[in-house]
Length: 212
Image (cartoon, one colour):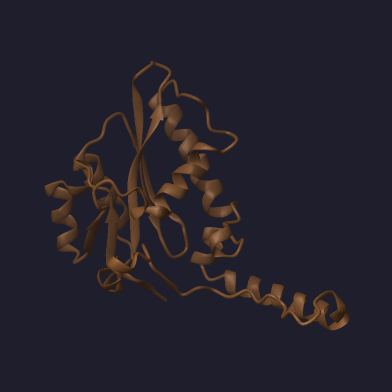
Protein backbone atom coordinates (compact mmCIF):
# COMPACT_ATOMS: atom_id res chain seq x y z
CA UNK A 1 0.00 0.00 0.00
CA UNK A 2 1.24 3.45 -0.94
CA UNK A 3 0.28 6.86 0.38
CA UNK A 4 1.04 10.15 -1.27
CA UNK A 5 0.55 13.91 -1.10
CA UNK A 6 1.87 17.26 -2.30
CA UNK A 7 3.71 19.81 -0.17
CA UNK A 8 4.82 23.39 -0.74
CA UNK A 9 8.47 24.35 -1.20
CA UNK A 10 8.93 28.11 -0.87
CA UNK A 11 10.65 30.05 -3.63
CA UNK A 12 12.86 33.11 -3.23
CA UNK A 13 10.09 35.11 -4.91
CA UNK A 14 7.72 35.90 -2.07
CA UNK A 15 4.32 34.22 -2.38
CA UNK A 16 5.40 31.69 -5.03
CA UNK A 17 6.10 28.02 -4.48
CA UNK A 18 7.35 24.82 -6.03
CA UNK A 19 5.38 21.65 -5.29
CA UNK A 20 6.80 18.32 -4.18
CA UNK A 21 4.76 15.27 -5.21
CA UNK A 22 5.85 12.35 -3.02
CA UNK A 23 4.77 8.68 -2.88
CA UNK A 24 5.62 6.54 0.14
CA UNK A 25 5.28 2.84 0.93
CA UNK A 26 3.64 2.55 4.36
CA UNK A 27 5.28 -0.81 5.18
CA UNK A 28 8.97 -0.06 4.75
CA UNK A 29 8.64 3.78 4.70
CA UNK A 30 10.55 4.09 1.42
CA UNK A 31 10.02 7.05 -0.85
CA UNK A 32 9.14 5.14 -4.02
CA UNK A 33 8.50 8.10 -6.29
CA UNK A 34 8.67 11.89 -6.35
CA UNK A 35 8.66 14.90 -8.60
CA UNK A 36 9.01 18.67 -8.17
CA UNK A 37 6.86 20.93 -10.32
CA UNK A 38 6.01 24.60 -10.62
CA UNK A 39 2.27 24.03 -10.16
CA UNK A 40 -0.26 21.57 -8.78
CA UNK A 41 -1.76 19.61 -11.63
CA UNK A 42 -3.45 16.27 -12.27
CA UNK A 43 -1.19 15.97 -15.30
CA UNK A 44 1.90 15.85 -13.08
CA UNK A 45 0.22 13.38 -10.72
CA UNK A 46 -0.60 10.95 -13.50
CA UNK A 47 2.85 11.28 -15.04
CA UNK A 48 4.47 10.48 -11.70
CA UNK A 49 2.42 7.34 -11.11
CA UNK A 50 2.84 6.19 -14.70
CA UNK A 51 6.61 6.52 -14.30
CA UNK A 52 6.71 4.79 -10.90
CA UNK A 53 4.58 1.84 -11.96
CA UNK A 54 5.80 1.38 -15.52
CA UNK A 55 7.91 -1.73 -15.97
CA UNK A 56 8.07 -2.51 -12.26
CA UNK A 57 7.03 -5.80 -10.77
CA UNK A 58 4.82 -4.05 -8.26
CA UNK A 59 1.38 -5.29 -7.29
CA UNK A 60 0.04 -2.05 -5.89
CA UNK A 61 -3.19 -2.97 -4.14
CA UNK A 62 -4.15 0.25 -2.38
CA UNK A 63 -3.38 3.96 -2.44
CA UNK A 64 -4.33 6.68 0.03
CA UNK A 65 -4.21 10.42 -0.59
CA UNK A 66 -5.65 13.79 0.33
CA UNK A 67 -8.78 15.21 -1.30
CA UNK A 68 -7.23 17.74 -3.68
CA UNK A 69 -7.89 17.79 -7.40
CA UNK A 70 -4.42 16.44 -8.32
CA UNK A 71 -5.26 13.37 -6.19
CA UNK A 72 -8.71 12.80 -7.67
CA UNK A 73 -8.27 13.79 -11.31
CA UNK A 74 -9.97 11.73 -13.97
CA UNK A 75 -6.83 10.63 -15.81
CA UNK A 76 -5.06 9.54 -12.62
CA UNK A 77 -8.14 7.68 -11.40
CA UNK A 78 -8.39 6.02 -14.79
CA UNK A 79 -4.80 4.79 -14.59
CA UNK A 80 -5.31 3.41 -11.09
CA UNK A 81 -8.60 1.79 -12.06
CA UNK A 82 -6.90 0.05 -14.98
CA UNK A 83 -4.37 -1.35 -12.49
CA UNK A 84 -7.12 -2.47 -10.07
CA UNK A 85 -5.80 -0.24 -7.31
CA UNK A 86 -8.21 0.50 -4.42
CA UNK A 87 -8.15 4.23 -3.67
CA UNK A 88 -9.12 6.06 -0.48
CA UNK A 89 -9.00 9.74 0.48
CA UNK A 90 -8.78 11.75 3.67
CA UNK A 91 -11.97 12.71 5.42
CA UNK A 92 -12.65 16.47 5.29
CA UNK A 93 -10.82 18.46 7.97
CA UNK A 94 -9.14 15.33 9.38
CA UNK A 95 -5.42 16.03 9.41
CA UNK A 96 -4.37 12.66 10.88
CA UNK A 97 -5.89 10.57 8.10
CA UNK A 98 -2.56 10.50 6.23
CA UNK A 99 -0.03 10.26 9.09
CA UNK A 100 2.83 8.55 7.27
CA UNK A 101 3.18 11.16 4.55
CA UNK A 102 2.72 14.03 7.03
CA UNK A 103 5.52 12.57 9.15
CA UNK A 104 7.72 12.38 6.06
CA UNK A 105 7.05 16.03 5.18
CA UNK A 106 7.99 17.07 8.73
CA UNK A 107 11.28 15.16 8.45
CA UNK A 108 11.85 16.82 5.10
CA UNK A 109 11.14 20.39 6.22
CA UNK A 110 13.15 20.05 9.45
CA UNK A 111 16.17 18.45 7.81
CA UNK A 112 19.35 20.37 8.60
CA UNK A 113 20.03 21.01 4.90
CA UNK A 114 16.55 22.27 4.02
CA UNK A 115 16.83 25.88 2.79
CA UNK A 116 14.30 28.56 3.54
CA UNK A 117 13.60 29.01 -0.16
CA UNK A 118 14.74 27.79 -3.58
CA UNK A 119 15.93 29.99 -6.44
CA UNK A 120 15.07 27.69 -9.32
CA UNK A 121 13.17 24.51 -10.10
CA UNK A 122 16.49 22.80 -10.78
CA UNK A 123 17.72 23.74 -7.30
CA UNK A 124 14.58 22.29 -5.70
CA UNK A 125 14.88 19.07 -7.69
CA UNK A 126 18.56 18.63 -6.82
CA UNK A 127 17.90 19.15 -3.12
CA UNK A 128 15.01 16.68 -3.22
CA UNK A 129 17.11 14.06 -5.01
CA UNK A 130 19.78 14.32 -2.31
CA UNK A 131 17.16 14.17 0.46
CA UNK A 132 15.46 11.09 -0.99
CA UNK A 133 18.79 9.29 -1.26
CA UNK A 134 19.57 10.15 2.38
CA UNK A 135 16.08 9.23 3.59
CA UNK A 136 15.99 5.86 1.83
CA UNK A 137 19.56 4.71 2.38
CA UNK A 138 20.97 6.49 5.47
CA UNK A 139 18.11 7.60 7.70
CA UNK A 140 17.56 5.16 10.61
CA UNK A 141 13.79 5.23 10.81
CA UNK A 142 12.39 4.87 14.32
CA UNK A 143 9.06 3.30 13.31
CA UNK A 144 10.74 0.36 11.55
CA UNK A 145 13.29 -0.40 14.27
CA UNK A 146 16.10 2.04 13.45
CA UNK A 147 17.03 0.55 10.12
CA UNK A 148 16.89 2.41 6.82
CA UNK A 149 13.84 2.12 4.57
CA UNK A 150 15.95 0.35 1.95
CA UNK A 151 17.27 -2.15 4.50
CA UNK A 152 13.67 -2.97 5.32
CA UNK A 153 12.59 -2.96 1.68
CA UNK A 154 15.32 -5.26 0.41
CA UNK A 155 15.22 -7.83 3.21
CA UNK A 156 18.31 -6.79 5.16
CA UNK A 157 16.47 -5.76 8.34
CA UNK A 158 15.85 -9.32 9.52
CA UNK A 159 19.56 -10.15 9.67
CA UNK A 160 20.26 -6.85 11.44
CA UNK A 161 17.59 -7.62 14.04
CA UNK A 162 18.97 -11.15 14.57
CA UNK A 163 22.42 -9.69 15.28
CA UNK A 164 20.94 -7.21 17.75
CA UNK A 165 18.93 -9.92 19.50
CA UNK A 166 21.97 -12.22 19.76
CA UNK A 167 24.06 -9.40 21.24
CA UNK A 168 21.49 -8.34 23.81
CA UNK A 169 20.71 -11.94 24.82
CA UNK A 170 24.41 -12.64 25.38
CA UNK A 171 24.73 -9.44 27.40
CA UNK A 172 21.78 -10.46 29.57
CA UNK A 173 23.31 -13.88 30.21
CA UNK A 174 26.62 -12.30 31.23
CA UNK A 175 25.06 -9.54 33.37
CA UNK A 176 21.58 -10.64 34.50
CA UNK A 177 21.65 -8.14 37.36
CA UNK A 178 21.31 -5.30 34.85
CA UNK A 179 17.93 -6.59 33.71
CA UNK A 180 16.49 -8.04 36.89
CA UNK A 181 13.17 -9.69 36.04
CA UNK A 182 12.78 -7.70 32.83
CA UNK A 183 13.08 -9.65 29.56
CA UNK A 184 15.62 -8.53 27.01
CA UNK A 185 14.15 -6.45 24.20
CA UNK A 186 13.71 -8.43 21.00
CA UNK A 187 13.73 -6.70 17.64
CA UNK A 188 11.15 -8.03 15.17
CA UNK A 189 9.64 -6.93 11.88
CA UNK A 190 6.05 -5.76 12.11
CA UNK A 191 4.57 -7.45 9.06
CA UNK A 192 1.13 -5.90 9.25
CA UNK A 193 0.75 -2.12 8.99
CA UNK A 194 -2.57 -0.28 9.09
CA UNK A 195 -2.87 3.16 7.58
CA UNK A 196 -5.17 4.53 10.27
CA UNK A 197 -6.25 2.54 13.36
CA UNK A 198 -9.37 4.66 13.87
CA UNK A 199 -11.98 2.11 14.98
CA UNK A 200 -14.68 3.77 12.90
CA UNK A 201 -12.66 3.05 9.78
CA UNK A 202 -11.17 -0.33 10.64
CA UNK A 203 -13.63 -2.35 8.57
CA UNK A 204 -12.69 -0.34 5.50
CA UNK A 205 -8.96 -0.46 6.06
CA UNK A 206 -8.98 -4.20 6.72
CA UNK A 207 -9.24 -4.45 2.95
CA UNK A 208 -6.24 -2.17 2.52
CA UNK A 209 -3.68 -3.66 4.88
CA UNK A 210 -0.18 -4.16 3.59
CA UNK A 211 0.57 -7.80 4.35
CA UNK A 212 3.97 -9.45 3.97
